Image 1 (cartoon, rainbow, N blue to C red):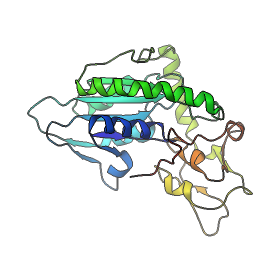
Image 2: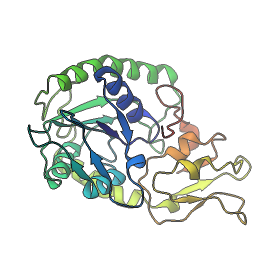
Image 3: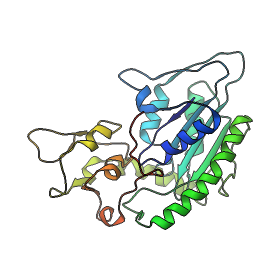
Image 4: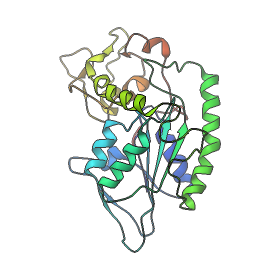
Length: 270
């Protein structure tokens, strides 16, 4: 079973490709997490995989919350093979340590972790308008996916690996810098940083429908979407999937563009 969380679409695409290659099933965290703690029922001899993006050098807040509350049920006749796959743009930072700690807190142990460099979709800093550059990054990622699938099939132990030429613990980023970067994530998650361009907004509700943390509401007395919670997970799904490109996060997000995802489709739940 492959459980994934995705913002703009990189991690969703990767999870679906791995499921296809492994003959496995890919399920979004949102579909497993409703009102109660998520319960994960594994079939006999089924592995447990997690796919997610890196956020500020660590795990997304949504994933932290999901994994801290999830309950995994599986046959105890053999050790459970648990692996994590992370998509990143610049560095994986402290992601592997956070992931292994989260798995351990559930009474399990992570056996393998795999990094996959993809397009960095944090548009306050990174420009995603260069289609040729994006396609080159994605082509390299596509070459890596079958290798990861083969490692998973063989139940390889791949902690602190260098599958793509970057050490898993912190990439090219020193540990002290990676920790500092993740501390800034809490401040960056404040929803007051989002804004909407009134002339462009079509009041279609796509942003509210797709928000994984249900931070956005469409109200009859408001002309624009309203962020109703102090913080979100900062996946930027609302920004990248807005049909009118009306949502902004900082002064550079407009000129840095929208990222349609590897397949050019929105990250809707299956």
